Image (cartoon, rainbow, N blue to C red; front, side, top):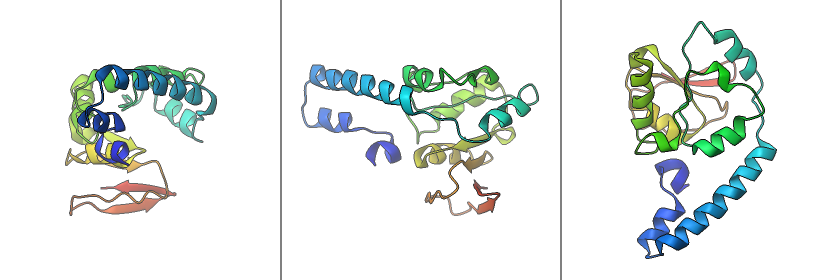
Amino acid sequence: MLSLRRGRSAFNLAAERGWAEQQIAELKRERDALYSEVSRRQTQVLPGVPETLRSLHGRRRMAVVTSSQRQHFDVMHADFGLTGYLEFVPAREDYGEAKPSPESYLLAVLRLEMKAESCVAVEDSERGLAGARCWPKLSCYSQRPNAQFALSRSHSNIVRSSGRTRYA
């Protein structure tokens, strides 16, 4: 849960405990290769996503802000033809601090040249939602209908509609 909640990984812990950089780099290469293979075989598009992107394309500006490395994002989305609906995809290498830092959202808002209150974040993780919530006027949604994310902001309300959870 360290990685999913705080944006840190077991590799950070290994470095803190004195593991050699070369040893950690080798483990990362092994992890990346395995993750790419699993992603290639098991990634599925959620129901309704292609239709939603198609209907919004040309009417709304869209981007994906991902904590995934670009190589993994590309592998996961290679066969679906959905990235053509997006203006850009900032991946993990494109910004300094991982979610829950709001830095990736700042990058997207600046690149879109829009105000945060004109944007909507649809998130699939607790740390992503936490990063989006750092923008007080950004509307945030969880695409997981049974998400039980704990929000630290006392003014956040949870609204359920059509099996989706909206944090407003």
